[in-house]
Amino acid sequence: MRIVFVRHGEPDYDHDCLTETGRKQAAAAAKRLVREGISEIYASPMGRAYETASFTAEQLSLPITVLDFMHEIPWGGPGVPEKGHPWTLSYRMISDEDFDFYHDDWRKHPYYEKNTATGAFDRVSREFDEFLKTQGYIHEGTRYKCETDQQKTIAVFSHGGSGACVLAHLLALPFPYVITVLPYEFTSIIILEFPVEKGAYIHPRIELFNDIAHMKELASGVKFQKEQDSSPRSE
Image (cartoon, rainbow, N blue to C red):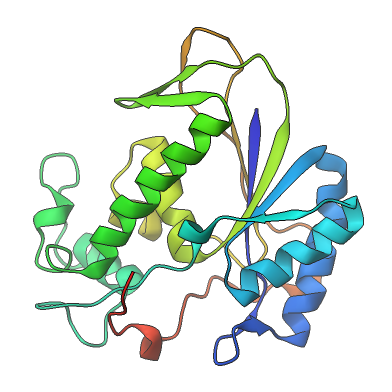
């Protein structure tokens, strides 16, 4: 099985939809994705991700199934710098503090110990494992047991934060580390392969990362949610 992860297009955050450039990006991504053999489309319930998915759904004449848990993650909390969100905070941990992700627990760092982003990471990870069960993969430790013999490709349209949660979880890497060293642009395409070996334990493998060849002059560089969106909100 292959999972194609697609970040939403350039957004109008205030109205939770795509800008005109974002729609052009989504249309370009849809044309690119036609040749991937996608048979199922899933999307975050938020407008900017769902709208991005709609372009591919129209091209392939497929329905969109909403994965509510893939909505963008919240952040903030006691001890969390007011102007920081996960991307800037994680960068500080690596560049300013030389944080040791091999030996120290990022969850206990002051930036994350009481940060709502940590709870969001746990929720997204747990829910994505439940989703993978429906696809025939059972999470055990840092590996997955394959209980399917079905070869297929599915697409998941989501966000910089929730998408990074899934990547960190599936690849067994620290979340702050992933969002610092594995950034990806609007409508970038990431593909993970889940080997189909029924009864065997497998590890997801990166087939493609941050592919934006379809964007050409539409690329705008890696950008994340606005700072003013960083106040804690309920799950």
